[in-house]
Image 1 (cartoon, helix red, strand yellow):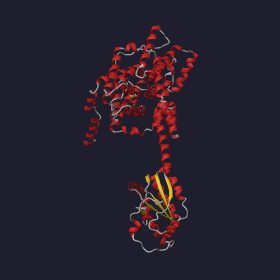
Image 2 (spheres, helix red, strand yellow; image 1 turned 180 degrees about the vertical axis):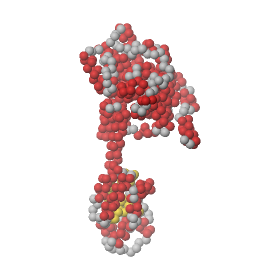
Image 3 (cartoon, helix red, strand yellow; image 1 turned 90 degrees about the vertical axis):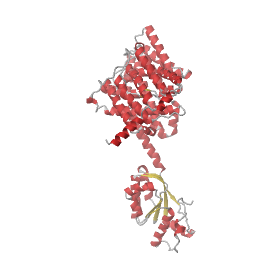
Image 4 (tube, one colour; image 1 turned 180 degrees about the horizontal axis):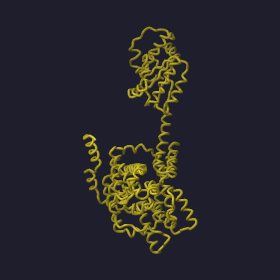
Length: 579
């Protein structure tokens, strides 16, 4: 790498690091940030435990992720209000990785995904988030909610986790085991916690009912000594020392595809969460590239402490904003409070019933579904409804990354179809210019003018060729191209083919108003040279009509008129047709 490239790379990395402005923001109103951070930590604790259990690596992995990733993204991320940690969407992706490669594979995938996120930040890839359509986002959010809910069925029924890496299969097996040997105690805990959370959120949205419900369930299970309410199990008091023992160089090749999937999801969910935070505030704007950089560092560090891949968490970020956070200090306080809990209260946390955590995540899944947004999206257009439903079904049946890819492909295809329909080939009246009524009538008998509107690209080009090939028996066709928005190689080739086919029928094709930015593609496939043959390409339509009349005079189809001055035929006449 050259010295200039190295300096540019270092300058890019330095631009992604924290700045003096961040420190000034932290000093603005620390009291509100401290209160917001404490509130978010209380909300995040049961979620971190639940998502850690759901991932297959245990509650301690969720706590380690919340502490390490939460702190690093608070410092290095691109949003002042983002709160990061383990999320339900990431859990959906991690479960099959655990099934295929074990805990070590998940930690290795997280480390690789973090490196990919840092690379994306350096390459300025954050801006491409804007190209993800809203129906795709709504669809995979709905799908994630369904998957999270299904993942909780085994613990909510007190059945443990049956074998299988497909959530539908696992949920069905858990239902079969429950039917054979019901555990109504676990069901009661799960339903009670979920009900308290859902009803409490409507009654007092600012009160952290999730932690209150979990505490109550833990106290009841301990006092009554309910064996059916299985607890989380022993948690280590503190974070494990950093370790690379989980890395197996021989598996790196097979883990590359899962790492790409995790990195893509982390980027998508984190940037979406940061955008939501911006929309909930006035004056806050996140830096997408810096957000990717912070998430990358978090995902590199979290596996070293036994954590799982992390993303920005929409639910926790929303709580952070609603409770008055102003700066990164709130997210940093959230991570510090969770760290204190890990070191000081691990024995108490280990007594929380798994069914209670299942209830927390069931309520979270239900709250993820915005019924109003779904109704609005499905009523917008038929295409939006198709994209939303297809993405949700693919999330449930396949996995989240495939679902997003499928959603994007379908959205792109439908968008191309809609844009292609905008391309039109309309016959327009000839400009009268300075011709008399009699002359104009004679010209109209032998000349037809078409105006091409919209994009002339591969999705619309062949329909254009079909329409143009059906031109009636005339001697000259004038193509008015000033309203062509864009043209690609396919469109240019189809135009060339149409000109050649009409030429074989003895019809001369003249073009006018070709835009400068479209000349390169027309030139590359030989269309421009074909149109320029014998002077068939003109700047304005009046010039093309004048050339067409000369052609008809030469062919003996029109009487030769006295010569007119060029100023009357080529100057001061609008490109638009006279109607």
